[in-house]
Amino acid sequence: MSTSTEDSSTEGPLLGAADIRSIADALGVRPTKQRGQNFVIDGNTVRRIVRAADVTERDVVVEVGPGLGSLTLGLLEVADRVTAVEIDPLLARHLPTTIAARLPDRADRFALVQADAMDVTELPGPPPTALVANLPYNVAVPVLLHMLETFPSIERTLVMVQSEVADRLAAGPGNKVYGVPSVKANWYAEVKRAGAIGRNVFWPAPNVDSGLVSLVRRDPPVTTATRRQVFAVVDAAFAQRRKTLRAALAGWAGSPAAAEAALNAAGIDFRLRGETLTVEQFARIAEAGPAEAGSGARSGSGSAEAEAEAGSGSAEAGSAGADASAGPAAPAAE
Image (cartoon, rainbow, N blue to C red):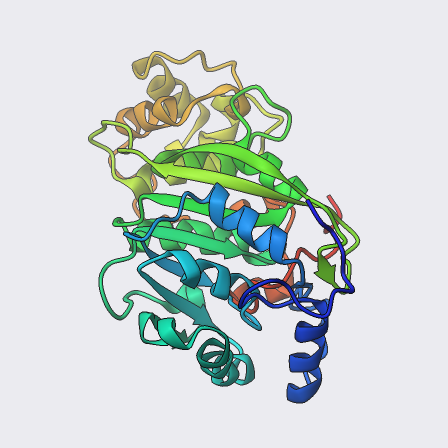
């Protein structure tokens, strides 16, 4: 895979390093660490992402944070339609111009929504079948979970995130980085790592490596508990991950004894820790818990626990979809 950052352009309509810098200069855009803006400048990497996402001519793709359009152009070459969600008004205003100049025959297959991805509840055109995005690490988990919950038509997802976040999303029970993002992502999909991305394909080059994560939609666990109830158990178990489930779930259940009773009813050893359980086991606990347990819980799309488990917790976490041409910023302290 080429990692050159100096080619004046790439073959076809994709943006090269010089193209990206030229557009950025014309717009007065200066990449900022606060928004994790590290623009993808390598066409081979863009095409690799599109291939890994299994995008076909039948797909309606939603892209979060298109930025200057690096990935957008690659997706629009292949997909039936692409809808991009961009929070930055300057980037949003210019992107249709880039599309029209680079892919004029496909411009009518492109739609833009200027909004924070966390606020998006509907999209123009047909329902999306795929989500492909290059997410800054500090919004990756909340945005991913929000989109999967809000748009059940999404069958396949491929996101590029900070390598550490990719590991956590794809981790299984018993893995030391298994946590809230791992469990919640598994509620919606089969999750796996889909490759690594080096630093030289971004401008400016970030201080961390990136990874691709593939998610293929599956049915959630069969349970009488709601998603909110299950996610409330997950949040409680990992809020005190070094404690046994009896202790960690005491607040959720009302008391340590009530937590132990729910765990016994679910057939789960109360001396275990949350990091050993599957999403199906968390669902069993939610079923067995007190009726009021977790009733006031958040949806879990962007909970503080999920952000903390993903290594984010940045003040910028509310600025979802700032730039999907943006690589991950430096990792937060654990």
